[in-house]
Amino acid sequence: MFRHVAQKSLGKASALPRFFVQPDEKSYFAIRTPKLCGIAFIIELEGKQNSRVRVQERYEVLRSNYSENVYEYNAYLKDNIPSKDSPRFTNIDMILQTATPLIYNNLQAPAETFETGKLTYGNANPSSKDFNSLADFMAGDGFVEIKLPWQLLNFSDPSLMTIHDDYYEHYGIEYIEVSEIWAGLSSNGSEPRRAELKPFKLKKWENTVTYHERLKSSYYALQKYWRNQDEDRDISLCLSRCMSGDDRI
Image 1 (cartoon, one colour):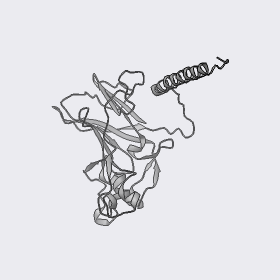
Image 2 (tube, helix red, strand yellow):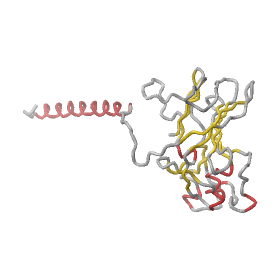
Image 3 (cartoon, rainbow, N blue to C red):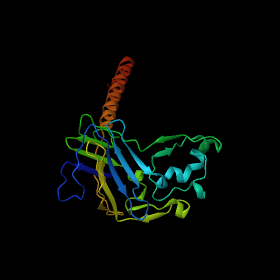
Image 4 (cartoon, rainbow, N blue to C red):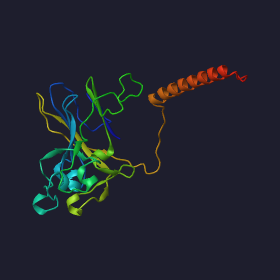
């Protein structure tokens, strides 16, 4: 997961500017990856129901892989290739595994997609009563915490910090290693401001990673269910033996 917390005052340890979360304004978290286009991604925070990650059109993976299925044109024809400095950002969609062209090989049928860049608001703390395992972001008194899958930002292998290279220079997906990304915050509220981008160092972990395990709440639910099932089965067996005069009870 790519994770970041933007606070009112981030202190000397962070390169990001001061950031206030206002309920009546639209806030942006811009991300630039080196060697590619300018701003590659924009995280739009616009309330609990209308926040999403958007991608610069040249770096849209759906367009580069399934343009003929979804948009009904070849993205690699010269006139269809977006400019590196295109100002157009689009929603991040993903083709469904059940899409008609993939299942029935009917290339004339439009492919179904869903917006995978839509952000879910909620509490990702497993010990919280309102825990939501699907939560992407959470806002509080002067802060926003964002948690995103690496792949949503076109990382091919985050353990090695490799990302997708320019699709249109390589006619498809090639990988490059990066050591940093640039990010900044802006808003269009009562005092609009442009994003001041600062570098964030990335550290690959390769095959060495620390982790911890925890039992999900469903574990205890199943444990209770099966325990009750065993008790019911023992009672039924006892009654059956009792009725038959079995002396083992």
